[in-house]
Length: 289
Image 1 (spheres, rainbow, N blue to C red):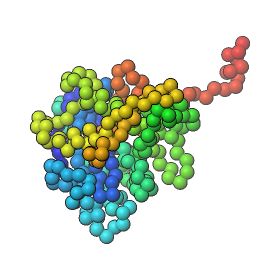
Image 2 (image 1 turned 90 degrees about the vertical axis):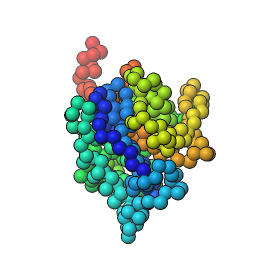
Image 3 (image 1 turned 45 degrees about the vertical axis):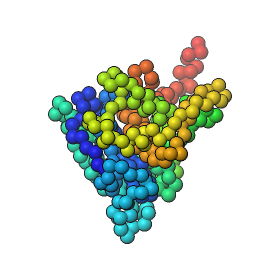
Image 4 (image 1 turned 60 degrees about the horizontal axis):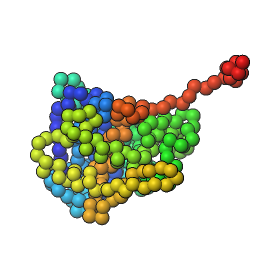
């Protein structure tokens, strides 16, 4: 399935993309954002395209292996990422007022162990390396250590329930860590805001049948409020009847990418917190007197 809209709404200043890596196929989504987190699902689909209105990951026919014959799994994923990003990140999108826009930031899911190394390799070697960021979703439950309590190291970038650690080790590529429970609650809250109000999230078009498959992905999980150690947290669980949640992951990734680019919800601190300036010993001594 391919879904396209050519015009970006007037208030959008940011375009973000997320790619969810599966063995058979790449799920992707493109969103536009106003500065106050009013959002628009601009486009979404799979690579390769399925050319069907409704399908599940289990019965997908057009697969990565068909699109890159002769390559092993990692080679197939690399080829798919290369083709998909070349198509989307090179494109120019036109806003209602005629302004031309490009995608600001693209996150790529690197959680699946079999694809982690190739995602990092691709993000390092791609001609779009400056826009790409591998991402890892983290399940932060009520009994987990919240992101706000992690000890920040020099060079780390920290935002609203996400952080980009300073890179050390073999991969040498910066990556994003995401509190997925928080952000699933966040995007569902955006979807429940009345159309036209600040902070709402809307889909393109007027025919709800167009988005039936997307709706199934977005409602594939349900929340359970859990309490532990004085904290109350929404913990999201996958419904047994709807195993595919990949565009929900994509929507979360697009929203986090927007937060990384500086988009913020009024009343919620979401801009990244930079490391505090280093203080000299002499300055501290002067403050004592």
